[in-house]
Amino acid sequence: MMQSPSCDLAVVRWAEAAENHVELAQWGICAPAVEKFEVKGALIDPFGNEVVPARKIGRHYDIHNYGFS
Image (cartoon, rainbow, N blue to C red):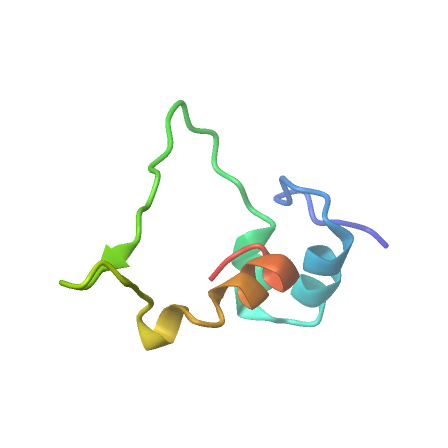
């Protein structure tokens, strides 16, 4: 399988999904060069419980399969 010249990461499942026109995967195979990155935290309710927004529940699936969410 050939990867496009703009592909920065060589994760086979991401590259295959990108070739199948999955937009998340097309974004996932491109990694910009950066000198720093941002670390995200969790949301906590008034009782100390972690709260996960509905749109984030399946995020791990997207990152695993496509490299992007």
